[in-house]
Image 1 (tube, rainbow, N blue to C red):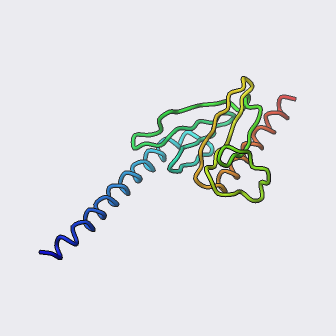
Image 2 (cartoon, rainbow, N blue to C red):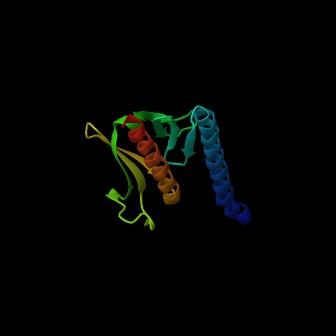
Length: 141
């Protein structure tokens, strides 16, 4: 009897882990369906991000797909920078650990922050979006 009572909390932990895993699996499945419309996309536990041509779209992942979706044209972006804990990263070679986000500032002065959990992935997205911005500027000149 005592052994059974000792194993009961462990059983509860395993059930909780199984539920959390199933929940995350459903989020990934919703992302895969959502991402088919984009040229480039990313998923992590904080946000879903997709780029199609000169537009980027991001939102918070849920089991039914992204919510709080924002779409922004790169044509209105005046500044793109990588931020750690709300501060711009000075040296792109070494990204310290913290809350990583891509900050996009528009011509109207609005700043949109796209959260990332992986700083390396955030750096790759920053470089790719910088290339897209450069291509836009050279095409319009």
